[in-house]
Amino acid sequence: MSGFPVAVLGASGLIGQEVARHLADEGFAVMPVARRFTPAQKAVLGERIAECPIVTMDEGALQLLLGTSLVVVNCLGVLQDDAERVHRQFVERLLRAMPEDCLLIHLSIPGEASRDGTQYSRSKREAESLIAASGKAPVILRPGFVVAPAA
Image 1 (tube, rainbow, N blue to C red):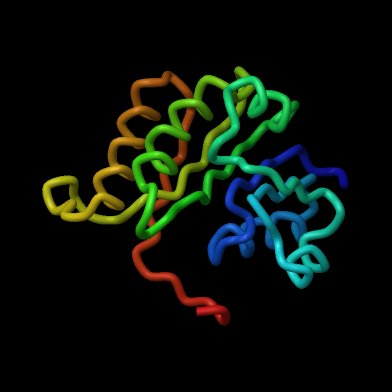
Image 2: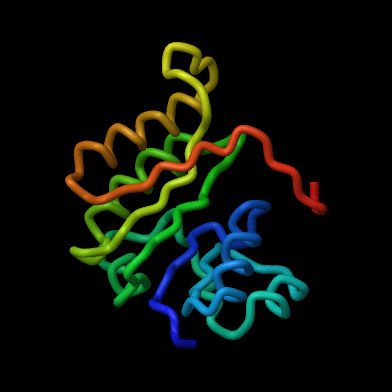
């Protein structure tokens, strides 16, 4: 692969899998990361996948995992349980673990904070606040409607 290294976190999810696949098709050196992948996902995403308990990893383990990644795409998200742990607490550790000059692309939520009525939306917004205060160079994506064959 000739493209620079990109870690896609949550690459077994609906959005993450498509992001990882598309980046790999475009020639980037993609490392898809998720807690687990199905055999079909492994066949599509290739040999660089990293199956690990990403959300519970400490800062040191995250540093080792991310290695020399120049871009981290955070597609991690849960709709029900553990939103605080997955969205805010994990992002806090991720920000400390990321390489110095690494770009963070973070998938968040659309809309205004004043309309956040769920733990999901509030924890996603709290993660954004942490990112803004970190001094990192982020890109926040706000997909409002996702259409995918798997859906």
